[in-house]
Image (cartoon, rainbow, N blue to C red; front, side, top):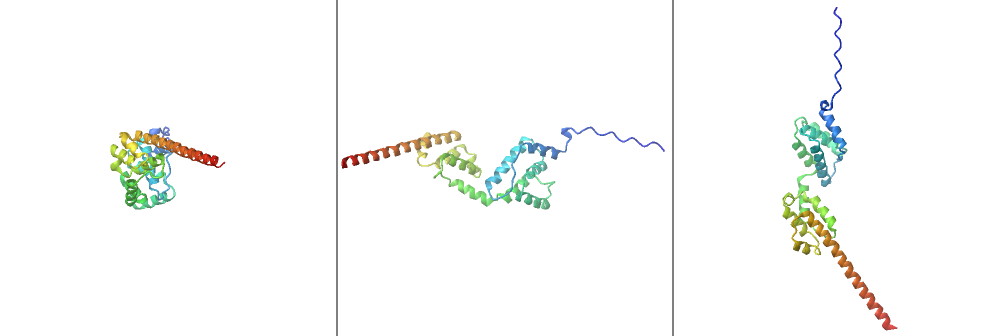
Length: 221
């Protein structure tokens, strides 16, 4: 009998570009420390998660829909993870596009009626008792639901100024701002000056009141 054939030589260690694409990209993705998504009713959390994850996906130059879906759902926990397991049994994940995945995601956690509700909230947004900083934060968080305004530079500024407090709005309108960031900074300055003037007026009234009281006390003596 001929001697047995020698075993084939061991393959060389795998290089990085030969690693399984999914495992390699998951490791790269997790180094960026993306946030986890638990599900839940808060639409801003739902939208922020997708925005953040897509930034990470773009940063590592993913091009295949399957990998994008794998990495996004890798960060699902609790309710979101349970929901995704259910979806996995209903849909063919091998042929699912990323757009289809996003549609399912938003239908589950951010349905159209809720978007309309937030759009309505944005339309009626006013500063009220909020500070300019609080108002601007609220304005920015809701702006994404009013795409017509979000993509209109002048309309965005006009809407922001229109919602400011009456002590600030006339001054801002008169200055005719043309840049959103400068508009916010100007509003903060006007707010600070308004507060200073209010403090001065209250101090003046207090001093006059105390002076009148002292004169009254002196006249009684």
